[in-house]
Amino acid sequence: MFGTRASIAGLCVLVATVALGGSTWPQRGELRVCADPDNMPFSNERSEGYENKIAELVARDLGDSLVNVWWPHRRGFVRNTIRAGLCDLIVGVPKGFDPVLTTKPYFRSTYYFVYRRDRNLGIQSLDDTVLRHLKIGVNLIGYDYTNTPPAHALSTRGLVNNVVGFYTFYNPERDRPNDIIDAVAKDSIDVAIVWGPLAGYFAQREPVPLTLVALPDSDAKSGMPFAFDITMAVRRSDKAFGAQIDSLLERRRGEIRGILQDFNVPTTDGQP
Image (tube, rainbow, N blue to C red; front, side):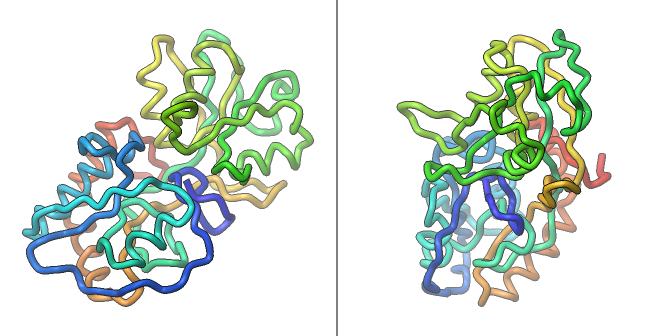
């Protein structure tokens, strides 16, 4: 998840200042895709995530064999993978993400309130007064306590003491991204504010019904964006390859949409 105002807080990647790595045109006959080996619902080493499925679709369309280059989504992910020349494509990044050349978007999503249906909280806005009396779960981007847009927006409203932080990155000994949704289902917190793909995927796996309510595209009080166009990324020097992927995304839009629906990824771009 990307955490600045120009990037998505939710895809699980923090990028440090980087030096330009090697730039090579994708090898004929294979498509090398950078992916996290343990980051559902996006990807895992068993190729069970929706980004895995989309990567397989892209490789088939190009007539290439798919080669997954596994690297955990942590600080330095882009520097150590695509900018180092280890791979040719990243399947999920926010539009305009500076270190790479981004393609046309293939979906748009936003953050969601998630709460137990049987609580009947009726939350529709960050300005609902009921939030002042609730425990609110939000994701933190990384271990340096970088804040996501909802955390900034809550702070602007003086709700810091109401916030319960959850890490975004996987840590096999402690943290899993589904922890925040589990906490809602178990009533450990009252409501969570979660990036759409995580909210939709994990909410449908809980034993109790959960309600999801979309936040708006942006927050007037804090100036933070909540909705992001999600694209693919190639190296900045690979403009022709980027144009090829743009054409593919348009051609395969319906199939990509079907994959997202299979993973209960909520979209806000007006598509079915």
